[in-house]
Length: 142
Figure 1 (cartoon, rainbow, N blue to C red):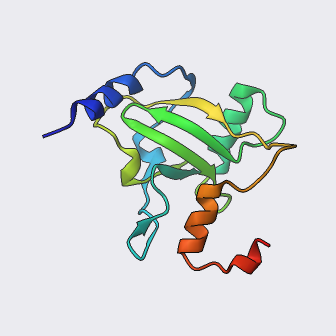
Figure 2: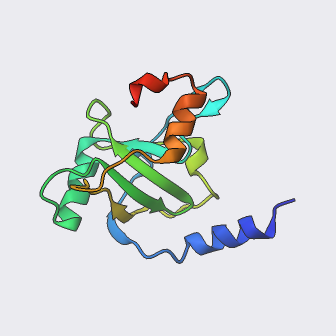
């Protein structure tokens, strides 16, 4: 029993504009567990990538430096990958929350690369509420 909105979201994944970067082999995918604590999931939709994967993205997007985070799609896998220097260089760590539907499609597609903001940086109020709820003292932010 799946909600119609969820089905619509899944169909929409196939039409997201992306840049194909590489065709991956099955042995380049590594299952990594979700990061959880006290019932909270801190890794929802976020996996990791090795240095050589980041170099492929850097080359495809003509970036001056390795990307620290990217938004990706690989068939039914969707989410974000962050660069992890001590992860196997040619591998992608996929968490269960990233798998939206089964697919044999193995083209590594990138939607967007993270960019460092140079001005207007601030903490979002939602993050402050979460940190407060998790017990971070108010004095840290004042």
